[in-house]
Length: 236
View (cartoon, rainbow, N blue to C red):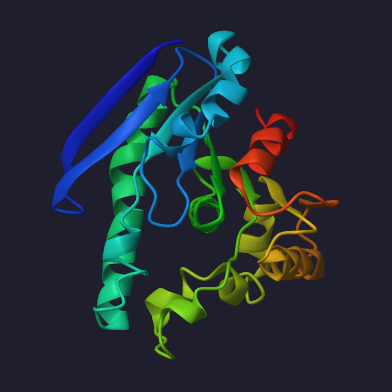
C-alpha cells in the first residue's frame, strides 16, 4: 500500500499540520479523527487495514487529517468566542489548503468525508458547509449539536458550524444542494450518544433531504471495533 506522511505550515492555523495519505488512485476521501485525535488514529486502530483491499485496488485514496480540537471547541480555558474563531480557522485550513491539495492529486474529483465520534461531526459539518467540493459524508456515532461546548455562548459562527441549528432553517436552494450528497448517518443501539445521530436523522427527514440513517442493532455501540465493521458498508 502506498503510504505518505505529508505536512506543511498552515497559513490559516499558523502552525504545522500533518496528514497521512494512503493509496494511489480512486475516490478521494478525507477522514477526521475522534475527539482531540490525531492523523494516525485510523491506521493505529485498524480502519485503514479494514479497507486495504479498496486502497490497494485503486477504488479509494484516503487522507487522514489532524485535528485542532484541543485549541478550539475543547479548549475550556478559552472564552467560547475564541474557541469558535479557532474552529473556523480549521474550516479555512481544510477548505483553502487541504481540499485543493487533495483534489489536485485526484484529478479535481469531489471528496467524500468520513469520521467517527467527534470526527463524525467534523465530517458532516464540513460536507454540509461545502457541498460544492464534497459529494458524500459518513458519520459514525456522532453528535451534531455544539451547544454543550460553548457554556451558554452563541453567535453567528456557532450557528453556521452547528448542523442541528442551520439545517432546519435552510432555504430550498441549500437544501437542494445537500440533497445531491450521499449522506450516511450511522450508529448502533448501544451508542452512548445515540440521540445525537437520531436527532440529525430526524432533521434530515423533516427537511426532505435524502440520506441513509442507519442504527445498527446491539451490540453495536460507540467504539473502534464496531466502526471497523461498519466502515465496510459505507466505503467507497
